[in-house]
Amino acid sequence: MYRERGTSLAGAVLWESISSGTGPVRVLPDGCLDLLWSSRRGLLVAGPDRTAHLSTSAAGERWVGLRLPPGVGPAVFGVPADELRDRRVPLVDLWGPVGVGVEDRAAGGRGVTAVLAEVVRDRLRAAGGPDPLGAHLAARLAVGRPVGAVAAEVGLGDRALHRRCRHLFGYGPKTLARILRMRRALALARAGTPLAEVAARAGYADQAHLTRDVRELAGVPPGVLLRDRPRAAAR
Image (cartoon, rainbow, N blue to C red; front, side, top):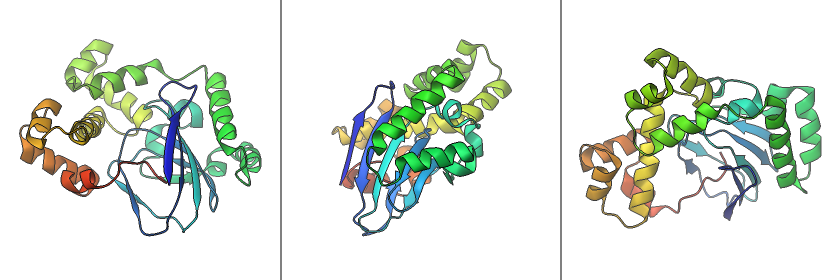
Protein backbone atom coordinates (compact mmCIF):
# COMPACT_ATOMS: atom_id res chain seq x y z
CA MET A 1 0.00 0.00 0.00
CA TYR A 2 1.34 3.40 -0.95
CA ARG A 3 -0.38 6.76 -1.09
CA GLU A 4 0.67 10.38 -1.12
CA ARG A 5 -0.91 13.81 -0.88
CA GLY A 6 0.10 17.44 -0.90
CA THR A 7 0.63 19.59 2.18
CA SER A 8 0.35 23.24 3.14
CA LEU A 9 4.08 23.60 2.39
CA ALA A 10 4.28 24.32 -1.34
CA GLY A 11 5.99 21.49 -3.19
CA ALA A 12 6.17 19.13 -0.22
CA VAL A 13 4.57 15.68 -0.40
CA LEU A 14 3.28 13.62 2.51
CA TRP A 15 3.35 9.90 1.81
CA GLU A 16 2.50 6.70 3.65
CA SER A 17 3.22 3.06 2.92
CA ILE A 18 2.93 -0.35 4.52
CA SER A 19 5.56 -2.82 3.40
CA SER A 20 4.63 -6.19 1.98
CA GLY A 21 8.09 -7.44 2.89
CA THR A 22 8.48 -9.14 -0.49
CA GLY A 23 11.75 -7.50 -1.47
CA PRO A 24 13.61 -4.24 -1.90
CA VAL A 25 11.88 -1.20 -3.37
CA ARG A 26 13.82 0.97 -5.81
CA VAL A 27 13.70 4.65 -4.81
CA LEU A 28 14.92 6.98 -7.55
CA PRO A 29 17.10 10.03 -6.84
CA ASP A 30 15.24 13.35 -6.85
CA GLY A 31 17.40 15.99 -5.15
CA CYS A 32 15.10 15.98 -2.11
CA LEU A 33 15.45 15.26 1.59
CA ASP A 34 12.73 13.44 3.55
CA LEU A 35 11.75 13.39 7.20
CA LEU A 36 10.64 9.79 7.81
CA TRP A 37 8.93 7.81 10.54
CA SER A 38 9.09 4.01 10.61
CA SER A 39 7.07 1.83 12.96
CA ARG A 40 10.24 -0.24 13.44
CA ARG A 41 13.04 2.35 13.25
CA GLY A 42 11.52 5.61 14.49
CA LEU A 43 12.43 8.99 12.96
CA LEU A 44 15.02 9.20 10.20
CA VAL A 45 16.31 11.76 7.75
CA ALA A 46 16.77 10.50 4.19
CA GLY A 47 19.47 12.43 2.40
CA PRO A 48 19.63 13.07 -1.35
CA ASP A 49 20.70 10.04 -3.37
CA ARG A 50 23.01 10.13 -6.36
CA THR A 51 21.71 6.80 -7.65
CA ALA A 52 18.70 4.63 -6.84
CA HIS A 53 18.39 3.49 -3.24
CA LEU A 54 17.14 -0.05 -2.64
CA SER A 55 14.96 0.16 0.45
CA THR A 56 14.16 -2.98 2.45
CA SER A 57 11.45 -3.20 5.10
CA ALA A 58 9.90 -5.88 7.26
CA ALA A 59 6.45 -7.17 6.35
CA GLY A 60 3.83 -4.87 7.85
CA GLU A 61 6.31 -2.08 8.62
CA ARG A 62 4.55 1.25 8.35
CA TRP A 63 6.26 4.31 6.92
CA VAL A 64 5.22 7.95 6.95
CA GLY A 65 7.34 10.49 5.14
CA LEU A 66 7.39 14.19 4.38
CA ARG A 67 9.34 14.78 1.18
CA LEU A 68 10.64 18.33 1.09
CA PRO A 69 10.98 20.30 -2.14
CA PRO A 70 14.50 20.36 -3.62
CA GLY A 71 16.70 22.85 -1.78
CA VAL A 72 14.53 23.11 1.36
CA GLY A 73 16.10 20.34 3.47
CA PRO A 74 19.14 22.26 4.78
CA ALA A 75 16.92 24.97 6.31
CA VAL A 76 14.88 22.29 8.11
CA PHE A 77 17.63 19.96 9.31
CA GLY A 78 20.34 22.55 9.92
CA VAL A 79 23.09 20.81 7.95
CA PRO A 80 24.25 21.05 4.32
CA ALA A 81 22.58 18.52 2.06
CA ASP A 82 25.89 17.00 0.99
CA GLU A 83 26.55 15.90 4.58
CA LEU A 84 23.48 13.66 4.27
CA ARG A 85 24.08 12.48 0.71
CA ASP A 86 23.34 8.75 0.19
CA ARG A 87 22.60 8.37 3.92
CA ARG A 88 19.69 7.52 6.23
CA VAL A 89 20.37 9.17 9.59
CA PRO A 90 18.39 8.91 12.87
CA LEU A 91 16.94 12.33 13.66
CA VAL A 92 18.36 12.21 17.19
CA ASP A 93 21.87 12.02 15.70
CA LEU A 94 21.29 15.41 14.07
CA TRP A 95 19.23 17.19 16.72
CA GLY A 96 20.22 15.52 20.00
CA PRO A 97 17.73 16.19 22.84
CA VAL A 98 15.43 18.10 20.47
CA GLY A 99 15.27 15.02 18.27
CA VAL A 100 14.47 12.86 21.28
CA GLY A 101 11.52 15.13 22.06
CA VAL A 102 10.20 14.85 18.51
CA GLU A 103 10.71 11.08 18.64
CA ASP A 104 8.61 10.89 21.80
CA ARG A 105 5.81 12.88 20.16
CA ALA A 106 5.79 10.56 17.14
CA ALA A 107 6.04 7.32 19.12
CA GLY A 108 3.29 4.85 18.34
CA GLY A 109 2.40 6.47 15.04
CA ARG A 110 -0.84 8.12 16.13
CA GLY A 111 -0.94 11.58 14.64
CA VAL A 112 2.55 11.19 13.22
CA THR A 113 1.65 13.03 10.00
CA ALA A 114 0.70 16.11 12.00
CA VAL A 115 3.92 15.86 14.02
CA LEU A 116 6.10 15.75 10.90
CA ALA A 117 4.30 18.71 9.32
CA GLU A 118 4.45 20.76 12.52
CA VAL A 119 8.16 20.07 13.04
CA VAL A 120 9.05 21.10 9.50
CA ARG A 121 6.90 24.23 9.69
CA ASP A 122 8.46 25.29 13.00
CA ARG A 123 12.01 24.66 11.80
CA LEU A 124 11.46 26.64 8.61
CA ARG A 125 9.98 29.54 10.57
CA ALA A 126 12.97 29.55 12.93
CA ALA A 127 15.38 29.50 9.96
CA GLY A 128 13.61 32.41 8.25
CA GLY A 129 12.43 30.14 5.44
CA PRO A 130 14.39 28.19 2.82
CA ASP A 131 17.03 29.75 0.63
CA PRO A 132 15.01 31.08 -2.37
CA LEU A 133 17.90 30.23 -4.67
CA GLY A 134 17.09 26.54 -4.22
CA ALA A 135 13.63 26.75 -5.75
CA HIS A 136 14.89 28.92 -8.61
CA LEU A 137 17.75 26.61 -9.50
CA ALA A 138 15.62 23.47 -9.29
CA ALA A 139 12.85 24.98 -11.42
CA ARG A 140 15.22 26.16 -14.15
CA LEU A 141 17.19 22.92 -14.30
CA ALA A 142 13.98 20.86 -14.21
CA VAL A 143 12.82 22.36 -17.51
CA GLY A 144 16.16 21.68 -19.16
CA ARG A 145 17.94 25.03 -18.97
CA PRO A 146 21.71 24.57 -19.48
CA VAL A 147 23.78 24.83 -16.32
CA GLY A 148 25.87 27.69 -17.73
CA ALA A 149 22.77 29.70 -18.59
CA VAL A 150 21.32 29.15 -15.12
CA ALA A 151 24.58 30.27 -13.51
CA ALA A 152 24.50 33.46 -15.58
CA GLU A 153 20.87 34.11 -14.59
CA VAL A 154 21.68 34.02 -10.88
CA GLY A 155 25.00 35.83 -11.21
CA LEU A 156 27.23 33.02 -9.92
CA GLY A 157 30.46 31.65 -11.30
CA ASP A 158 30.89 27.93 -11.89
CA ARG A 159 32.61 27.24 -8.56
CA ALA A 160 30.19 29.33 -6.52
CA LEU A 161 27.21 27.65 -8.18
CA HIS A 162 28.70 24.23 -7.50
CA ARG A 163 29.17 25.07 -3.80
CA ARG A 164 25.64 26.40 -3.43
CA CYS A 165 24.17 23.36 -5.18
CA ARG A 166 26.10 20.93 -2.98
CA HIS A 167 24.78 22.75 0.08
CA LEU A 168 21.18 22.91 -1.13
CA PHE A 169 20.78 19.62 -3.04
CA GLY A 170 23.67 17.40 -2.05
CA TYR A 171 25.46 17.44 -5.39
CA GLY A 172 26.59 19.80 -8.12
CA PRO A 173 24.34 21.37 -10.75
CA LYS A 174 25.27 18.92 -13.51
CA THR A 175 24.32 15.91 -11.39
CA LEU A 176 21.10 17.60 -10.31
CA ALA A 177 20.30 18.43 -13.94
CA ARG A 178 20.84 14.77 -14.95
CA ILE A 179 18.55 13.54 -12.18
CA LEU A 180 15.80 16.03 -12.99
CA ARG A 181 16.09 15.22 -16.72
CA MET A 182 15.67 11.52 -15.96
CA ARG A 183 12.56 12.21 -13.91
CA ARG A 184 11.17 14.43 -16.67
CA ALA A 185 11.82 11.67 -19.21
CA LEU A 186 10.14 9.00 -17.10
CA ALA A 187 7.08 11.22 -16.60
CA LEU A 188 6.77 11.61 -20.38
CA ALA A 189 7.20 7.88 -20.93
CA ARG A 190 4.59 6.99 -18.30
CA ALA A 191 2.18 9.34 -20.07
CA GLY A 192 2.54 7.20 -23.18
CA THR A 193 5.19 9.06 -25.16
CA PRO A 194 7.42 6.68 -27.19
CA LEU A 195 10.97 6.47 -25.85
CA ALA A 196 12.56 7.86 -29.02
CA GLU A 197 10.37 10.95 -28.71
CA VAL A 198 11.00 11.11 -24.96
CA ALA A 199 14.74 11.24 -25.63
CA ALA A 200 14.37 14.15 -28.04
CA ARG A 201 11.97 16.11 -25.86
CA ALA A 202 13.98 15.61 -22.65
CA GLY A 203 17.27 16.69 -24.21
CA TYR A 204 19.10 13.40 -24.77
CA ALA A 205 21.23 12.87 -27.88
CA ASP A 206 19.17 9.80 -28.80
CA GLN A 207 17.30 6.87 -27.26
CA ALA A 208 20.54 5.02 -26.53
CA HIS A 209 21.76 8.02 -24.52
CA LEU A 210 18.48 8.03 -22.56
CA THR A 211 18.79 4.31 -21.80
CA ARG A 212 22.41 4.61 -20.75
CA ASP A 213 21.77 7.60 -18.47
CA VAL A 214 18.74 6.03 -16.81
CA ARG A 215 20.64 2.81 -16.21
CA GLU A 216 23.50 4.72 -14.54
CA LEU A 217 21.17 6.67 -12.24
CA ALA A 218 18.45 4.09 -11.59
CA GLY A 219 20.39 0.84 -11.88
CA VAL A 220 18.01 -0.56 -14.50
CA PRO A 221 16.93 0.53 -18.02
CA PRO A 222 13.77 2.59 -18.64
CA GLY A 223 11.71 -0.44 -19.65
CA VAL A 224 12.09 -2.00 -16.21
CA LEU A 225 11.08 1.23 -14.46
CA LEU A 226 8.06 1.64 -16.70
CA ARG A 227 6.81 -1.82 -15.81
CA ASP A 228 6.94 -0.95 -12.12
CA ARG A 229 4.30 1.19 -10.47
CA PRO A 230 6.01 4.53 -9.69
CA ARG A 231 6.19 5.24 -5.98
CA ALA A 232 8.53 6.72 -3.40
CA ALA A 233 8.02 4.02 -0.75
CA ALA A 234 10.35 3.79 2.23
CA ARG A 235 13.46 5.83 1.56
